[in-house]
Image 1 (cartoon, rainbow, N blue to C red):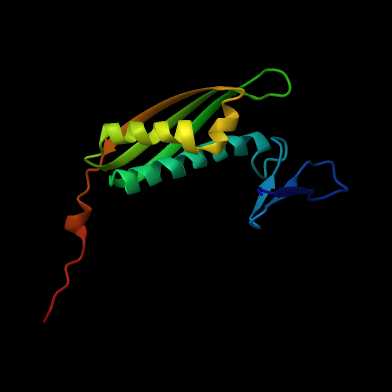
Image 2 (spheres, rainbow, N blue to C red; image 1 turned 180 degrees about the horizontal axis):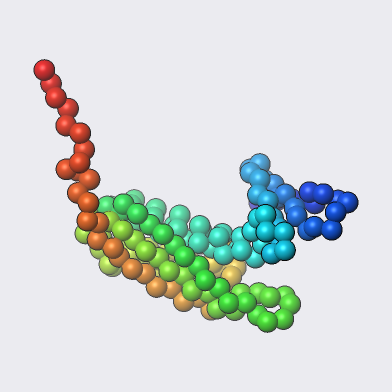
Length: 154
């Protein structure tokens, strides 16, 4: 079971700031744009989607396809309905994969598996929004192996 709770931080003030506690006992400060001390709840949905697909894709790339990934970023940009509830209507997911000789087919398959099989957040968001995914592969330019210190035996 997944659980969470939010508690108003200062009950006698007008601000709408909450502290969220996840079931695994992690804390996040939530706020509205006026307070500006933490993310809005809807921003956390975008973060959850980016994180969910990122975990899936990096796992598939490294474990199933044995890709040499040195960097990975997922960006989510979401348009919302104009009227409440302001659900996501269009979501753009941008994957930027950095590594050595990264196989384009492996990246496409990892993203497909995340979208069609593994990402629970994406499966929920799909009920209100159309998802548009793109990716970019950046070839790693630094030869990290050459920079590794060499053990000297004396």
